Image (tube, rainbow, N blue to C red):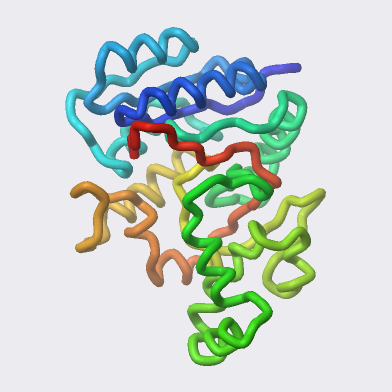
Amino acid sequence: MDKLPFAIGILSWKGYDSLENSLFSYKKNGLSNMTDQKFICLPEYSDEGIKIAEKYDYKPILVNQNLGILGGFKLLAENMPKGPILLLENDLELIENKKETYSQLLKSINLLNEYSLIQVRLRSRKNPGEPFVGLKKYKSYWSDNIISKTKRFFRPIKAHRLIGTSTYYHKEPDKIHPDIVKKIDNSFYLVTSTILNWANLAILVDRDVYLEKIIKKAEEIKSTKNINGFKNIEIELNNSWWRNNKFKILITPGLFKHNRLSHRGY
């Protein structure tokens, strides 16, 4: 297989057992051989983190202090080449084989450019791992029972904003929400940011668009909510700016399962 035109970037604040598990899966299933551009950002790094990065042939980006999720991903992206970049946290295990991984990534890279996508989601639809808060919210509003129907009646705007997550619940979400969820090809679905929030987990983005639109906007927004005192992008972009821009988002069949081991990391 030829190399693909993208780079891999992993953010790992501690959580080295999860990082090792993820990197092993990337090697086993061929991901790490699909590009020569591979980076791991290691805030508050230790020798263990450096050794793991070098063991799997990823370039370590070393930072003495914790930067949080926004700061960590910003630094990571700034040190990566222009073009498509795959951004991962340290606890995202690759659960598909080499052929499927290559196929989904190739199609994702092509569609990223063709549709001017703000992000491609590569978290597995059939086995996404836990936690998955958005999926629980979707079920609470869109299940076929009286409680869900009541919620939709009294909170229609909230219910509408959750429709994008139907892609992780229904096998054919375009048939459940035909005017809102568009099937592109072979279980690839197109939605807009009107009905799906920004996500940090396992995403393919254009590096410059990510830095100039997403990171810049998240930095500008003032919020009282945070993670360990830091901004995390998802919280900041859960707003009208994100929804009103109607950014295009691609949901793929997915490759990665959220699998956090004993150390939490992010």
